[in-house]
Length: 304
Image (cartoon, rainbow, N blue to C red; front, side, top):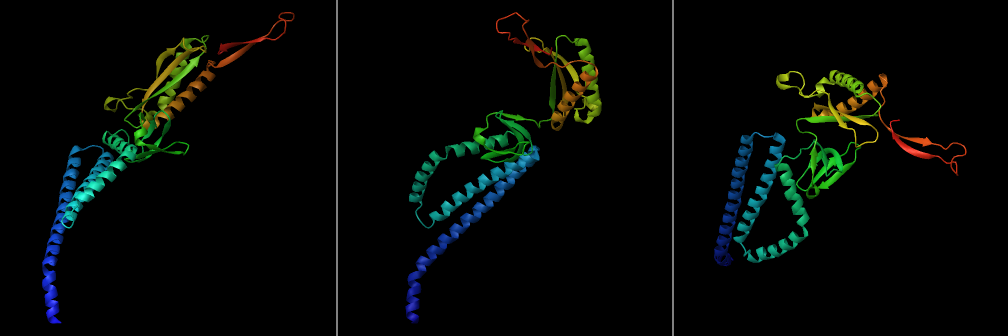
């Protein structure tokens, strides 16, 4: 029995040594890949620390690049380790054919990922920003991924938008915004009286919502307090002349300021007997005996 075991060991010994050698080099490859990944990850982390940009954007890009680097290094390491045991040429050829087929079927997915990367890299918007996408969806960004972006409207509806479908973005969370409110008055009203009433409304909004406006240089006053921009229309509307009021506000205060301006203008005009223009229809009837059918006609008139 002893002779048989010794003979069997002598037969298995060369193959076992070869297998252990291959296993050793495969382990060395995987350890080297792990060390390389740690070194490159630390290098990427230090680069983003030096840039001193938005922390949220840096963390997103760092995670993205780290994931891509990890998949690339580990994939190459696995193929190199596997090559120690078997010929991987047929595997690579088969993977190339499968990858080509998948590539044709996943063009939109690749396009979504590339677009998502550039959205993040170019800092177009962040999670929590209020945005308008493609002029159709307006809401708060809840998730920003490489493939899709999710936006929740004020009504609570949640939209899932493929990144490749995002063409235009209007971001309401960038430093400052300008509130723009218009009011139209009949041509019969006196523009000088209107201006005085609008100035009164502007000052009331300025006092009540002072913290909502952008401060001026050195914190002195306001950069652009509510003021009358001027008469912005007298010929495009058949209702009357249009005044425009503007003010520079913080992003989160834009709609609050615009609502306040509209309400104050409405109340000030009512208190001072100034009419706001609105479309009306005037019925012109026939006098008895005039016309064959005795039916009057309608004429449009603005603010009368």
